[in-house]
Image 1: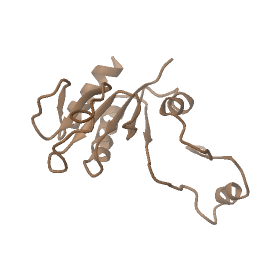
Image 2: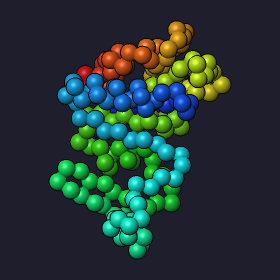
Image 3: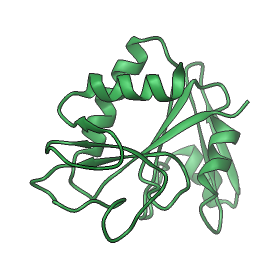
Length: 167
C-alpha cells in the first residue's frame, strides 16, 4: 500500500507551520491517522549531553532508538538525507496521510503557502514551474492553473486534502 502524502512548501516566515498545525487538528478531528515530516536544512539535535541516549550515540551507536509505553524516537546517523519517499514508506505505513513541511525539491504533490505581505512571487510558479503543485493557500486572489485556497481558512485547506487524497 502506498501512503498518501502532500508537502506544504513556502518561503521562510510565510506561516507554513501555523497552517499545518491547524490542518493536522482538523484531520485528527475527522478521524484520520496523520504523520508529519519536517525538513530541516540545518543541523538539529534532539539528543542532549548528559542523557543516556546521547551517551550511547556518542559511544558510537549508528542507530539509537528509545521507546516508552506511549512513544518512540530514533536517532539514525547517515551521510546524506534519505529520499522523502523512503522515509514515508519506512516509518509511516500505518498512517492515512503524511503531511510534510518543506521538501520543495521533491517530486511529491505540493501545496504552496503564500502570504502576500511576505512575498508576491511563488516558489512553484513564475521563474520555476513545478508540475507537482496541486494548490496554493494564499491570502490574495491569484489567477493560477491550480486551485487557490484561502490561507486563513484551514478547514477549506483540510477539505481539499481530504477530497484529493482521502476519498
